[in-house]
Length: 382
Length: 175
Image 1 (cartoon, each protein chain N blue to C red):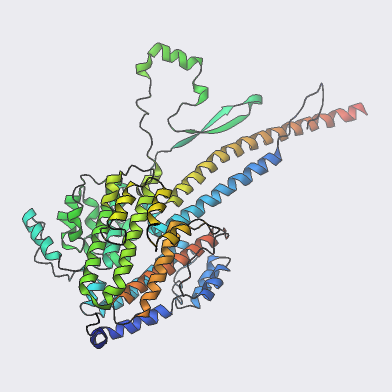
Image 2 (image 1 turned 90 degrees about the horizontal axis):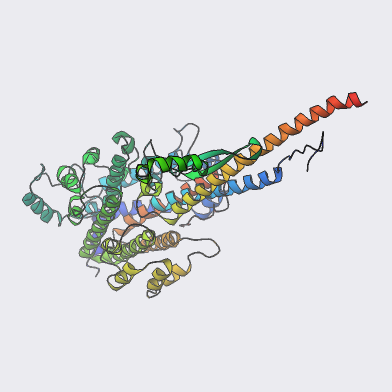
């Protein structure tokens, strides 16, 4: 229901919406990609990127240029843009854009606390709205925990963490031995605290449990994000809810596909599926029982939107399921810009920019490995 | 192909064509392996497949076993770490086993299989990462085959040079 979104939106958010639409227009075009795939070396790639909106972002890097450096610099650039949006945003857009930094209003619970206080804290946190940054924070927490398992130094891993997911308690993550330690000592004041209540059953932080923890955290975050968008209503809900439903269904399919032949049981697998989306609940129940790709495809055939995606897997281009899902995601995010006065444009822009980074990194990998047969397997956006 | 000399000594020169074929075969899985790793980074994220995920010290899953083949040539074979190489299981080893008895074999100590390196990157890894592992495994076996063939060719060449020298020495005498 358009309850005045078009009347009041521009007062608080018009400037930023204009800015994000300008940023979207600077995404690489098909012609830019054609120029990039013709490059012979990474230096050529750098020169071609200088003619785009990226400009001289690699100017400070000396030889040899590597794919990892290109990826890091592009992420920094995206982070800079996102921080600008966040710093200039007002509520509720700022809540949509960011969850908690040092200023997040949870200081009343400032010390590791007893179970009673934890419960009170969680009740308070339910009303705060998790946002995009939480997914990067989850990735950083898992990266640090994996690093602790491999006995890496914290400094080494901190340098590799996603800049959009930084929070002050990050450095202490690696000292935790159980999820309880992790929650009580470290994450209780962060936006990730509400998502931990579903993940406290694992006892030790080994590889399997870290994987379960990562997926359950992400599931909780996604469900909370969906609830926030739905409660917000308006055009934001109309644009964001289908995108998040697709994300939930995609996670269910990919978790199922990657779990074949592993030690993850069907029961554990089912607990990782987000409880919303087109597949929820009947599709998820069938998916939990699938034992191979064909059985998974049979489940997808019941859904008009997923049947053609699964049929596109394989084919002459050798597309994987991840590829077809990325293509679908790009389509949905481009369509988000067809409507005005909603927050979905910010989410869509970040997602499209991430796809652009993936495309450029893929082209750079093919160039550096001198393996050009699949260099055109990127996903064009504009 | 051989060179009869002094009572019919024959020098098998080796199979350069076979070496080229096997080398080409090795290059393909290596290229596919690196590209599959790049695909895995595409799916999982660039920082999810890299040096951060594995420790600086690791136990090998496979070992290179060198054995002596005919003509004293060294032959290389890739074996699983912890598995006894075929040449070690001979009469001597069986004799040791008879003396010590089955309960005293070292098997319990080496029964702990090395962890699958795929688990360093998580439990739910994409298919491309598994493909990369399979490609690099194939590449390893081919590398051992190439080394064995190269040894054989080098031996053949040195034998041929030796025989050519002998021939040179004989010819002025004959003239």
